[in-house]
Image (tube, rainbow, N blue to C red; front, side):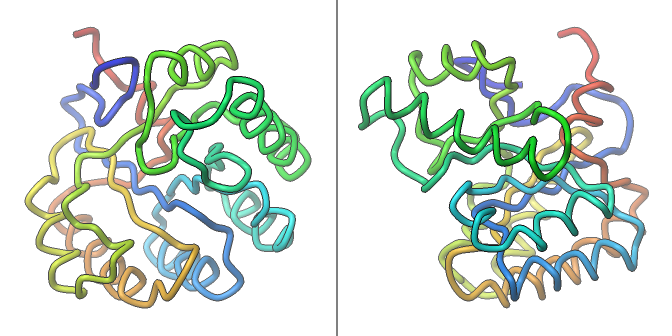
Length: 208
């Protein structure tokens, strides 16, 4: 699971993984990732930034209409531990409302930008009934464009039942991420894994 209320993986005997994408929606890379996921019948969770939802609402709607989960990733990606309580609250609530506009329902999960959180951030997430989500493959560092092979190998090292995988579809050139996902999804499905949304994964978690 995690500490301070952040969840990096679910304890499950099922061969399930949750693939997640941060910082979108993006008009170029989000549709490319949707194509890859659709080709394999895989579901994912997109941690969207409110300002990007406002910029590309049709892309956000496409994510939802194709059966993927949308989670809260704040309005404009600040370090939440470095801003005041009122601003943190606005960051979450503003994006929460935008996601409801797109999906018709409240988001259930939240990922703090930079995985930067403290007890106050955790308490605010809990007050909004959010599960706060981390990931197991942080060393893949796809956000830094370290090369497709690096993203794939560092992700494969951390693959296990119930793992939550982090990638990025927004804020920059994400072509390496798209290529890595094109390799990872079919390979992991060949190994017997199934890709589900974070909320679906958490429902399978066994008591620790």
